[in-house]
Length: 391
Image (cartoon, rainbow, N blue to C red):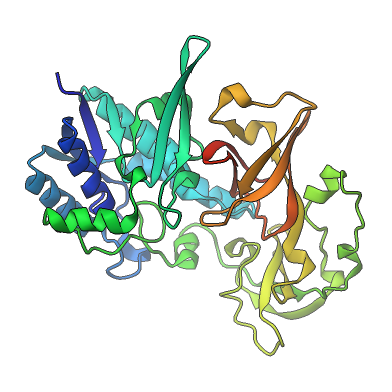
């Protein structure tokens, strides 16, 4: 019997080639398109409209001679992803919906739908790889970075569990993007030259302020500029003072000067440069802090402003996730890893310290724009071992 696999056909070239490769490998392949979004009013015109994607996915399935169906997960997507996004922004944190989308939608709701069709696996067009080995009589699954260093998407899968990985296939993880496009052209796929989608997972490229304004009201507030020499940045903490090294600077309006107005602190994120619309400074302004309760945003001048950098970050125990559960640290233990705090960021050396209150990640070099609500992911070489929500 051929093993049955459901491919999440998104209407893009990566998932199209994924379906082709699996069919060539002898799997019984079913293509399924996930419709997760209805509201086109906040998407930028002609950027990843779901209708075009659905049609392209259907054409690809016909071309490959595989069954095709669409599944509407917009209710679950709204509850698990969109509502979460609004709540996080409201609280002054910056969520990562793409990471949550993989954990909650593709490898949960979508996976369950695939299993009901008798599938043994679900496959996606992620540039990531999977491996496994036996330990103490059970199979341990590993999530590895994709072979293409420019497209590695393992970070977006950083919240997957052993159970989810056991059912996942990533056929293009061993390929480079140009190789994927070459395969698509060779077999004459309609998606061969299609641009990669951008923006929110399944929503497309959105005007984020307009998107957030559906639920979060505009509210005028002050923009404060804080000088790089302000006393708040002269902390002089000991190098092992993890609690202070990972804490965010205690900023207040009295520490700087009012330089403008904004329409709501919850629309801004640490490290943001665009959207401030304030000129007249020698160097570009960056957001170095937000206060949604007082509705104030704090800015600093220049990329080297000390308010942009921290030496460590903190992940509460409840938000720490180990893909490799067998490597989980005990209280008092420390271990060397490499980590990244955003997609495409080069991996940097760090030490993980497990304390009673949670996990501290101390970097070898200060990191720019460590943002609450985003995910830090830690790696052992090519293997993504765990991740956590930055506090």
